[in-house]
Every structure is written in C-alpha cells, then in structure tokens.
Image 1 (cartoon, rainbow, N blue to C red):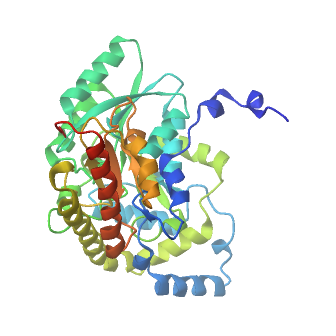
Image 2: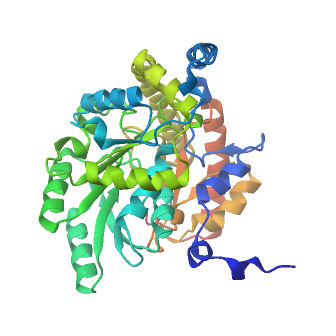
Amino acid sequence: MIEYERFLSQSALKSQGSAIRKMGVMAIRPDMISFAPGYPDPVTFAWAEFREIANELLAGGQGSVLQYGPTRGHKPFIEALVELLASRGITATADQVLITTGSQQGLDLAGRVLLDPGDVVLVELPAYTGAISAFRNTEARLAGVRQAPDGIDLDDLRAVVARERAAGHRVRFLYLVPNFQNPTGLLLSREKRRLLLEWAERDDLLIVEDDPYGALYFEDTATGEDTRPIKADDTEGRVIYLSSFSKTLAPGFRVAWITAPEPLIAKLEVLKQTEDLLTPSLDQHIVYEAYRRGILTERLPMLRKFYQDKRTTMQRTLREELGDLVAWPEPKGGFFLWVSLPVRFATDEMLPRAIEERVIYVAGSAFFVDGSGRNTMRLSFSLPSHDRIVEGVRRLAKVVKAEIAGHPAPVEI
C-alpha cells in the first residue's frame, strides 16, 4: 500500500475540508431534515424561463455558446454587469470586471493574488468557512476580529492590526460579508461602512467585500439602501467586490464576478487562466439572457418575501419550542439564523445526538479562527419547506432540552 502523504505538498497536507460540505452529504438522506447547507430553494428557480433560454441558445447555432471564450468573460455579459453594478451604486468599467466560476473561485483568486505565506488576513469572528479555507490554502495567518450587533467591531479591528504589526506580521486585507453575513445574518451599519473606508485609507489596507446576499433583504426590516455596498463609496480603489447569481438565479450555473481596480483584475485573470481558462460559456449565456430579459429583476420581490417568510417560521418555532434557552440576532435578510446555546455546551459534541434525531446543522466552531464559538450553531432556513422547518426545529429542541437536562446549572447565553 503506497503512503501517498509523503508525496503531498505542505499546502495539501494542511488543507481542510468544508464542514458545510460534509453536512451536505448527509442532507441527501430523505429522513434527515437539514439546516446545514445554505442552498436556495429549487422552487424559486425560473425553470420555464431557463428552459426557453436554453432551447433558443442551443437551437441557434451560435458557436460562442458552446465554444471557448475569453478568460475575462462573455463581453456582452460583462457590459451588463457594469449596468448591474451601477444599480448598486458602484461605478466600474468593463476592464474592472472578471467573471468567475462561483464566488468561491473569486475568494481563491483573491487569496493567491494578494497573499504570501505568513501574511495576515483579517476576518470576522465568526467568518464564512469557504473564505477561511481559501485563505488558509495560501498559508496565510488568519486574525479574527470580534463582531458587534451592527457588524464588525471597529475598536477591536484597530487593536488586532496594531497587535499583528507589533509582532512583525504583514497585514494585507480585511475580508467581510457586510450584508446578512454568513453565518450570523448580521447587517453592517451604514456608518461603519463609511468608517471602514476611512480606516483602510489610514492604515493603507485593502478590503475584500463579499456580497452574495445583498439583494435578498427582508422588506419588513431592511431596504436596498441599507445594503449599499462599501465598494459604492470607494474613491481610492481599496475595495475588491465579489458577488454572485447563485442565491438569486441558481447555484448550478456557477456564475459570479469580481470588481476591482484594473491592475488587480489583470493579475486575477492570469491566475484564472491556470485554474479553468474560463467560466463555462453556456452558463454565462443563460445567466446573461436571464438578466437581459429582466427575469432576475422581476423575481427579486418574490424571493425576498419567500425567504422572509421562512425566517419567520423558523424564529417562531424556536421561540415556541425553546423559549429563552437559546438566543440569536434577528436576520434582516439572507439565509441564516445564528443560534447561541448556554456557554457551557459544545454544539459539535451535540451533533451526533442531533443526527440520531434526524436533524443536522453546522456547528459554530467551524466559523471561528481562534477556537471559540463552540456553543453556537448555524441554522439555514432557505432550503427546507415550512413544514420541515417546524418539524426540524422540534427535533432540534428535543436534543437541546436533553442536553440542558443532562447538565443542570445556571444558564448564561
């Protein structure tokens, strides 16, 4: 038997799998109710419209639909993205846009372009696991910054930068998800967005802004103005902006994009050539046509109401089943509830018992780079039906109550 580990690079030896993807494998069991992966609900997909677009594209004999294309992306699509960005307040040219194969590729490319081994990336506590993995694969150091109810704690941000620089480490950029953050669902305040730009200029750092959920604000608590990207007010070119169609059209198309200053886009494009040459042409054409025909714009109000109602169902059932035994910040958009248990409990240790009850979640520790957060869990309400949300929360409540009963003590959340 060959011991293949001795052939692996140091990067491969240190690489870690995604806790979310591991749970996703288990989610395919029909008897399992999954609150783990942040999947959009397939009932929201524009099936008929996609079918019509695909039939037209594949019947027309247009070679570019199934041919190799520019690494930068399908030119009419890039020009449409410039228009979409303008609707979000972002001024960009076609030379400042690169289409990527999902936002995960964008994170990987950003890490590879900006980081050397030992460099420091600033991330929120907690932070999206896909970004943690992408940046760790460059052998960078990840320094966590605490959150406040209105997003990242600016005082702690300044303290962490000072600490890392005093230790002789090179701090490169801050990564954050300002709109309905994965995993907490928090919305970064408008004032903090302005202050972050001032901070980046003063400390001569970049910001990598990841915005997959900004269009999915809940109209009972937020507006489009609340989700205005940090990039929209970036006058110096300090913000690298990532966004995607995965949560609003369909994730199977794997179509996303990066907006950044031209010198960075040029380097990102070169690295993308080594990864996959280009984002699949057919996917780009379908998404472009869906955008051009107004399908996305027409469906957004429905999507906001659809996920808002699911959030409400999950919150109501949690309150009914667990009362004040758990707590969470109410999300104003996105796909997630971030639930805290009494501090003495560890949700990763509780997970096998949840699986026995046929319900799964993502243990919160996966989202922390400092080893904390063991009493937290991320619950995604986006995929299950309302009935399955109710039943899944009931199953989860049974597990939580049994855990608390087995460890009687004053609770502190």
